[in-house]
Length: 320
Figure 1 (cartoon, helix red, strand yellow):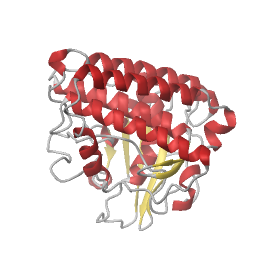
Figure 2: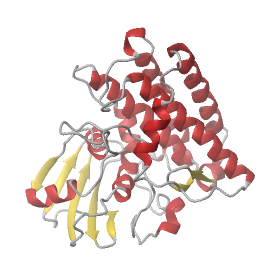
Figure 3: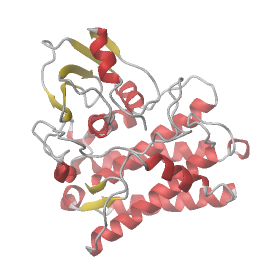
């Protein structure tokens, strides 16, 4: 998340990633949405074409949990060599050890959130996204004195507990159990599976990026994350952005492929599925490029049409 001294730099690197907020200002997913609709913004229109690849539906539960485990094992394998512990990553000022600390902090925050959801206790006001980077940095770097073996063992235990909790969710709980996220407020339970996938997949990318070797984002993870990227964009419109109305099209390939009409106005950014042939600009993305662009890791996409419109759209957002 953008924060002083730890924001995005000229090479597209950012301090950390977490995820998205379901709605910020007047967002819609096929219909108007307000902040009170944060927990249901995703369920108003399913953007996945195949239910097993739609993590917002119970049919996609087994798929996303399988991919979370695969990405987590990949992340842990990258973090286990002793020489990797203090190696640089794509997150400026963060070594591999800080990514591990961040994941421990994030996952253990999820445990508290589920406890609050099940107890029915008051969760208070969410912390909000703008200050998230600074706080998350303090939380992650607080683990720097914990030995590598100890912190990795703690993260492994957290992973198993989290996958067990998510695996135990039934069809109704997957979509209808509302869980208070510390930064973003009430969200459906399935979001927390997506949050784990975002963290493990994107931060594995960050570790590999730090090595200087060419690499890419695994297709299964990228495909599952595509629907969440539009809501992430909705949530990160800069407070000082020029919101003079305009439209742009986004075309995505992969298992959650589709054409999306993006509208920007003084109410923020909204999107819906639909034809884009009549729009002045269309930006083509494969799934991985969409995810890495939305998270501020790269400047990607093929622009067809008015370059100025694409430039305006891609620079609307603060980076996470």
